[in-house]
Amino acid sequence: MYVYLMQHGEALSEENAPGRPLSLTGIEQVKATALFAYRAQIRIPTLYHSGKLRARRSAELLSDEVGGEVIARAGLLPKDDVTAVAEWLQSQEEDLALVGHLPFLDRLAGLLLSGDPDKSLVHFRFGVLVRLLRGENGWKVDWMVRP
Image (cartoon, rainbow, N blue to C red; front, side, top):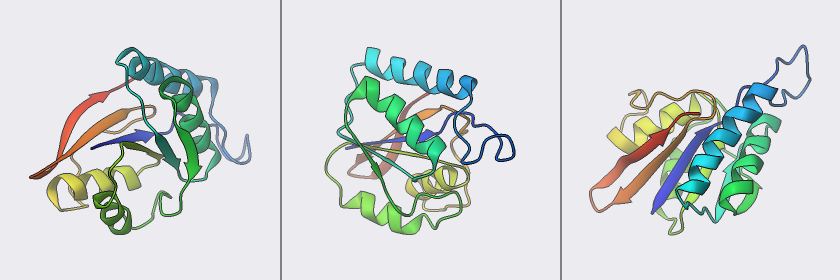
């Protein structure tokens, strides 16, 4: 099973745009990553996002290229505890994507890859997509793409 972790694209500031939609740069970041995924023939049945506008829009843009249903899921906010999501992932069988924020994604990757959410093992930035593979011996980074 693959889990794709994506940090949303660059967003506008709250003071300039309530709700923090993606900036034009953010849209281009996510589209570039999504195009890579499309060309690599990646299909993701379900893309979960935090419910925040910037994460939802990033998930929609990724879904435009890889297909899949876009769903808001509790527990993916920037400061949410990663333990519940990590446990939930162990029960999943289908490939899926989690589109969200820092520090949540960094902490989730640390927990899955090393057992320590405080261990930063993946360098996330806007529009980055990381593919993790769950195997018999746990999780591994399969690949990572930056816009």
